[in-house]
Amino acid sequence: MARKYFGTDGIRGKVGTFPITPDFALRLGYAAGKVLSKYGKKPSVVIGKDTRLSGYLFESALEAGFAYAGMDVYMAGPIPTPAVAYLTKTLRLSVGVVISASHNPYYDNGIKFFSSKGAKLSDEIELEIEAAIDEEMIIADTLGKVRRITDANGRYIEFCKNTFPSHFDLKGLKIVLDCAHGATYAVAPKVFEELGATIIKIGVDPDGININEGCGSTHPDLLVKTVLENSADCGIAFDGDGDRVLFVDDKGSILDGDKLIYIIAKSYEALGNKLPGVVGTVMSNMAMEHALKSQGYGFIRAKVGDRYVLEELTKNEWLIGGEASGHILCLDKHSTGDGIIAALQILAGLVELKKNAREVIDWVEYPQIMINVKLANKSYDWKSNANPIIATVEDKLGDNGRVIVRASGTEPLVRVMVEAKDLELAKQYAQLIANSIQG
Image 1 (cartoon, rainbow, N blue to C red):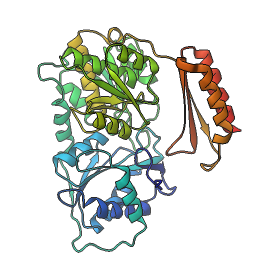
Image 2: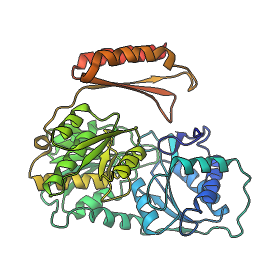
Image 3: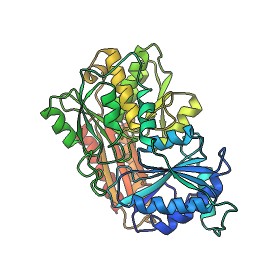
Image 4: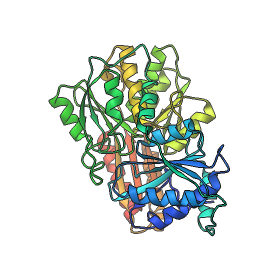
């Protein structure tokens, strides 16, 4: 059964356009409260948000919906998405909710959920919630109470620091932190400073509309510039809600999620705990896959979305996985993708290996060309034109490349990715497929 509202990472869209409206959020809070109260130890929820202005609207609407359903509500305020997962577990609550559109501009927003175990909800539970949205809202026998968690940031800061090896510190390192004017702005600098690093901060002045604007993990140019200007050892960028991370080395080279996952895998091996394998996605670079397999690691590709990476990790009882976009899961540290915690494991690995990132990453990525093709509407049948072209391109590439074509789960877009050893060939084939989709 297809989901009506939930995409690969919650419900997301433009503020004021259904379903990203306060009245829908009210009903969603009520429906989620009725469904999710069955899966926790007590009917209670923690609500966190990023820094975008519309967060106030949806925070109030969700609070009212949950309280009407009889759930106690704990308000965490602006805080990273993985912090909500942590608080849900540590406070023994039924569910955690995050109001965020992640790396999207301020005029978008979204709502995503965590289970009592701090993991993304299953498809089955999301379908239950969707079915309950259309039901009549009946007042609970006992309305929920609302409280504010006054020490939410402090709890999370200590949690992050405790994932860093106790016999290491970051003294002597100069690090540029780009918090994207988002949810990490108040916590990430303290984590790295308290571990001993000298920090240069950018993207730490949110005003409600500047989240992800020209900064953060999706806009790394400012980070590159700041690292080079300050002769920093590295730069670290997060996205708007703090579940993605991107690095820049001392020479200004950008390290995406694939390279960061590789560093973590190698650091675990250096610490005497070689991993059986790593989970990537269909977008992970072939060069990383070949490098891992040549060194005895397993490699599995999941569908795009950290929830699917988590499913494969859990099924195989593996620890490390993630996406090229910078969603990285370290399941021995946290139950969900966490930009700050992943960054700490990367730094710990480089300290342990006594190498810089360039020395650890002993492979060169294959060129990947990505084109987003905008559709007039989501119902447009692009596959009938594109599929024969896709098949032809795949046949020509053989074992020397890959083609991934998928519809966005949140926007009227089709994403085309062609990977090949030859850059010009990848460009040519990607444009050929994009043209066939546009008709």
